[in-house]
Image 1 (cartoon, rainbow, N blue to C red):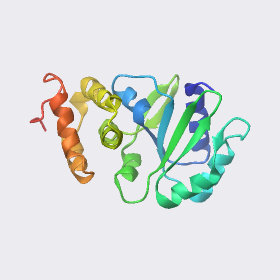
Image 2: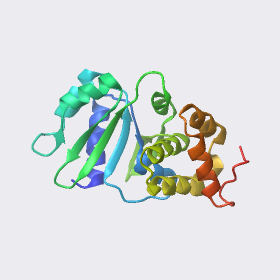
Image 3: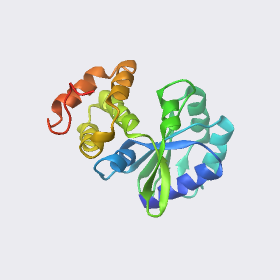
Image 4: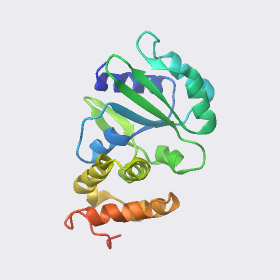
Length: 195
């Protein structure tokens, strides 16, 4: 299944099950910055273990690999599980929001954005996308996350709430990474001393 079709299929299920979601990751950074190719769909959700079980049952075993046990454990531990389309290699990373943290807040701040032709979907706000990319970079060091952040700053820099990013970067232990991103950014795009 091609990625746009997989995304539409997954979001139809989330909507049908009334599971709040927000796209994050590279699809979200492309919505506010410069798009790039990726095989991953990253989505933050707020759901119960029973909803996780129902979600998994909607992805036919003949076409997808998904573990309902892994989904239930992810809900209990506030972590993530994957849904894989083996025929294309496309994957959905489903991240559980939790109750009282930044990830849960992403759902409160999400925005409807036209990501698919003729369809608006919920996407995390650009500040939260940047914070997520800072986390990914801090965990794995991949330069693609820094490029994604630079793209958001370049395209959406005028609307970013930098104070919000700084406050959450401090709470998440990402201040040094954020400052490094600001130093690397072109002076015309962003300056570290601008709040």
